[in-house]
Each structure stands twice: as structure tokens, then as C-alpha cells.
Image 1: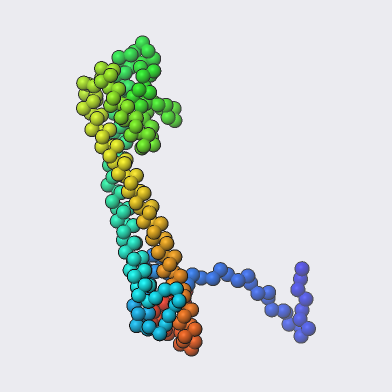
Image 2 (image 1 turned 90 degrees about the horizontal axis):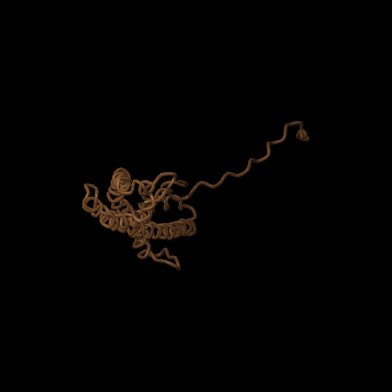
Amino acid sequence: MLSQPAADGHAPDPAPSQSKASAPSLPQTELALAELALLAADEWLLRPQLTLLWTSSADFKQLASDFRGSIQDTDDAGDALAPQSNRLAVLDALINDKLRYVKNALANQYDEEDDGRPYYPEFGIGKFSGTWQLPKDRVERTKALKKLVAALPKHGLGQQKHGTDFWAPIAKEYAELTSSTAKGKGLRATEVAGKGTLREQVEDVLEALKNLLKANYPNTHQAEKRKFGFLKETY
């Protein structure tokens, strides 16, 4: 529908556009937020006259320090998992490649019994995605490797080149790495959750400080905010 001209003959002003989502008022990256929190905490400690009922400048200094430390702790936890994950990937490739020797040995031993396939479950071997192999899930693969090692001597295959001496160390290392990695992931998840909680607390205090400064310094609050580390109106 066409707009009608205004009484003075001029075209009416365009309708106001929809308001855009407000820009974030705090840094979005964890490191930048942590550095801002430390700066703000130090400045707040110099101004005992500025108070919040639910926290103190000293408590916020500790909170900011904890948050900064949690960022490195989480990174370290992730770094610690990398060598274990890489080694498990190497073992997975080795297992997938060498399992054929076990299947070949069973085929030779039980050539009249569908090439030994009826005995596959004893060795932890199943049909996954149309291929006879060990489970891909590492916890299940750990169990399958234990069954494989136990079944080799039972079927007279323990002394072969790819027999017990070959598979037993692999099964042992695989089980240890899988257990260690699972514990490490649990620790990392806990640390990430803890870091998220700290970040929320830091953001709450920083927002409160901005309001506190505006209330106490109505004419100069922008300059005061910069002293606290709030270098931008938005981030």
C-alpha cells in the first residue's frame, strides 16, 4: 500500500527500522574477558567506597584469578589427551591390518567349517558394516581384544607369528589407553563445566560494576569505566 503525502506536501519520514540485536557489552573470547576481569578487580580494590551487597572486591579478585587459571587448565587437559588419542589411532590401524592373519589362520584350521567363521565370536570378531572385524567402539574393542587373546591358545594359534605374543601386548596397551583416555575426557568435561560457571560469575560482576560506576559517576562514568578496563562501549 502506497503511503500518503504529508499535509505539507513532503513525503513522510520512512518507518523506523526494526531494532537490531544489541551488541555484546563484554569481550566474547575467554582470554580477553579474563584480562578485563583482572584489570577491573585491581581497580576496584583501590576504591573501597564502591560496594556490592553480594560480593566484594577481594572476592572478585580471587574469582578473576581462578577464571584466568581455568583457561590454561582446560587447555592443558586437552593437550594431555592428544598423545593418547594418537597412539590409539595407531593401534586401531595396526589391529585392523593384522586381524586378517587371525582370520586366515582360522580359515586354514577350519577350512571345512565355513573357513572358521563359526568361531569368530570367540575371537571378538563380528560383522560390522558388512565386514568381519573387531568393534570400532573402543570400549567394545577392548573387550574383543581380551577375547581374542584368550581364544588363540584354545584353538592352537597361540604360537604363530601373529599369535599370543603379538596380540597380548596390544590388548594390554589398548585397554590401558582406553581407560586413561576415558578418565581424561571426564576430567576435561568437568574442567570445561567449571570454567563455564566461572565465566558466568565473572560476567555478572563486570556488568554490575558497569552499572555501579554509572550510578556513582553519572557525568564521568565513561572515563571511570576505562580505568576499570572497559576500553570499548561494545565488544
